Image 1 (cartoon, helix red, strand yellow):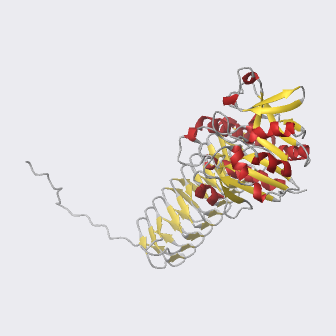
Image 2 (cartoon, rainbow, N blue to C red):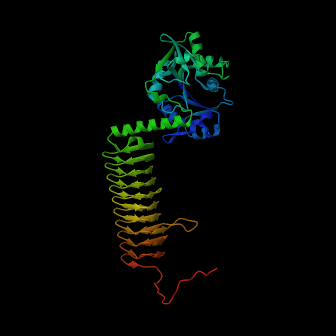
Image 3 (tube, rainbow, N blue to C red):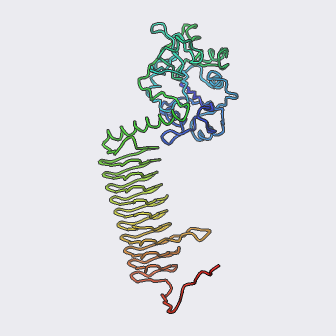
Length: 454
């Protein structure tokens, strides 16, 4: 039996007070809509249809390259009107699952159970019981039988006392869904076409209506304003933190932890407070991460220590290395085992072999650095000539003194020493001292200029 998925993503989200479409606001580093699309992928649906409307071009840009088709709802006249846009594209012999682009944490297992409850012949609703149901559509029952759903704005005072609410997720036999949606009317307080009105139609047609009550409130929470988004962010971060701790990761404070991608940890990993992980990050056994680090798309080898206030992007760090505090590794930084990168050192598109050290106030850009190099404080590779980038090659066991400029392209041979304060633009021979600086001169009898009196 075919499974079609319709995702509602047309709304502006007025209460967000933002020009960005609501479904493009980010949760745990990804757009709300992307979370829903990931769930759809796990369901292996025959087709996924995304209903766009407000700033449709921006929403559709997110969907480029993904197995989903966009259908525009213009103007936006309610949830029923949104599903009307999808009707010509649905397989009548299957089941249609309706999801919302602003309900990001719904699990594949939950919606799969809802589809199973539908079985191509029943209208299945995903519901939730809330202590404070204000704003949600109420589920109206007679005993166990579901009779209908009434929107909050249209509910009577007695109906507003009902605690069971509709989450906006349903699964329906497609043939009947097409007929019901085509018959929707907009005679309500909002003058909109409510998809929820099809429940009463199903009852009238003697099609069974079943409710699958979800236990986890967080899974079906929608986003309407920045307060709700921030609340859900902390919920998802705590969920991720708990999962890591159950796997043995030591988090100094799970309430001050942010994962905006994937984090894979070995044994005995320790993470201090206020660290942010983005993209795909891999931490080997025994890695220690200091406070206030931002780590993006980086692999860190076993036993490495990352000191506080250190930022990495697209970097690789070898086993037993030490980096920070206040260091920055930019894309292409590849540190070998036991490398030391100290405070206020920046590394970009450079490889450092085992045991190399740059401990203070230095820049290494477009460089190849050999084993056991000692790179002095204040030294830089001048890798850009104003038009092109050039590479610096530093051999093994080189000592670069403080405040040196290595003007690329340049090669420093194995075992060479570069005297402090040198500007080196020609090859420095292996095993020799290279000094390139002006001769020191002391002038006797010289006096400082004196400021003229007005």
